[in-house]
Image (cartoon, rainbow, N blue to C red):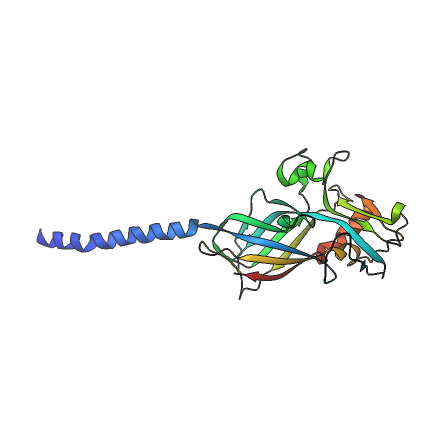
Length: 256
């Protein structure tokens, strides 16, 4: 009987410790935190200044911008082991005229080290046919075609002396999800595994992206404003979307 008592006294702390360890591990797996994404707008390396600065496209043509905004949605983070986390309901409208929109916070992200980020430039197929919505997708934001039942993914407006449109206007409203004029594009960036996106409960990392507005006019096709200065969906929007698919965004650095 004494031996049994001694064994029980010896085993109970071990059982308790094991139970505690399992509980701690489970808690660690379930912890969540947040991080921020910052978008810095440029035109071929120069800071984007609406209505004032003059820039050149790949054809050497001068232009100014007065509107530049776009959707970023369906953000997905991946780890080195291949596991991924798709941020639910992640729809953000980034607008150069609204500084606060260029810094977004992603909440409730499982803690861990992420080595890849991917997101849609624009709005996914399903949401394009879900009718008028709220938040970033509210038509009040001026990014919804009521006549075409769909969203404008990227909107750029300005002027150029070479434009043959009235008042030398530039109007690039890129959208459409039906082939052959589907303009949904996906951006992805590999993150240096030596400095991954470290999401922790005690720190809030920041990802900094450079966004080059001039990418709409070069990449796959160099655009001259003398021949292309207006598009609202259709084949010309595909030309522009193919351009910016690779050159619009660049992951510059991460602050962990």
